[in-house]
Length: 209
DNA sequence: TGCCAGGCCCTCTTTAGGGCCTT
Image (cartoon, rainbow, N blue to C red; front, side):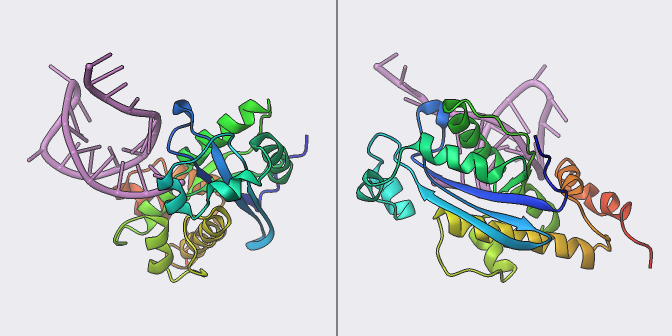
């Protein structure tokens, strides 16, 4: 099985019927971008029919209606296509624990496993942008003046913004902390550190001027 | 009947509680 290139990752975002696959919630939309060498090169965006009516709250929250989902293919078809899209690349999501739970639950239903590791833009942002008003995706997009078309709570739009946030954090690690070429693995290690330990941790990797 | 996510992270902490973040 091919391994993920070191400079390649997939940033993904699910829209779902609720917060917990353990409570019967399902995915209703998956959006993702493939980033290669710091550039978004491919996009994936599909609605999927969970097999039951979604709540009025989710319709209002996402703008995805039951009518839209009635015309969408079932989850297993979409997730099989998405499995081919992510291949074995490393993965990034904002509050990755949430998206990982749904990815694992949907892949389990089609008996698929993936090898990529998950990185969390929320946990990195909490350490790098401690002065931000909060660490919601929308707030961070405004705080860092990241590209956006103003669409929120749709899977591809959120995945694109999360991708730009990830790239911005890599750039800030270079410019603000003096790191030569921060890796996915370094950002994962960073999320294990307390906020107070961030400067000391990053200084170990800084290139001396 | 009553309840209902789960993990991170801070603090008036660690034998706990509550806010944040995702839909």
